[in-house]
Image (tube, rainbow, N blue to C red):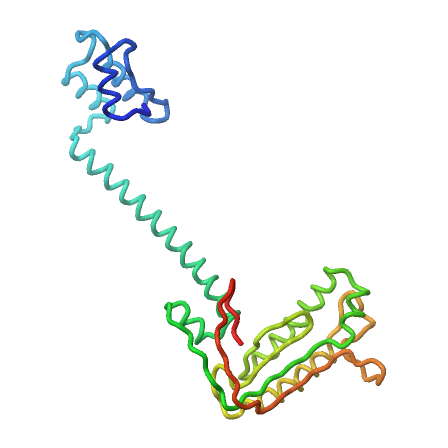
Length: 259
């Protein structure tokens, strides 16, 4: 079609030559309809079909069905509306899928209660906790292990270990704050206040110690993560119970950090 404004089209029609005619591709309409259109563009008036001839040709084009321009317009609008509804439904489904992915990612980064406030646009005020239990652990000799490993092997080691730990702590009423390198931090009594947080964290620590004893490094299968040897104890955990006057808050920078 013509990439012109209505005013430009009128000016070109008023002042030929050249004669202005739209360019219609073959796929834009049925060939018969394009042929009728070209007949109506004839420069000599006696060469153009009259309305009865156009009506007869469209009737033949519609296989004998009555041609009603209003009905045709309604059919076109209905078809467009149906297509639009289907497109909206597909886009809504895609939006819901992406929204669920975002919510899952947010819930992995932050406690669910904090994530809900952020999604609602509510401020997250600092909270004070009278008693909490904090757990830290790291891999003793991690630097030595890293020196005998490729970067991908180090990533696989930490991913395997923390996947195992994440599955283990799900059985306890605790919250994993973060992992930094080989350090693993878990807290009990935050963000949900419970009276038996020390029991949960202590039992969890024993469970993680048990799991680390069974863990094997993929690229170093002969090196257990924890051995009974006094000379080689690669796994170390520190459990601090009843740390008083703790506080938690959301730190906003380029990303949200809970701690």
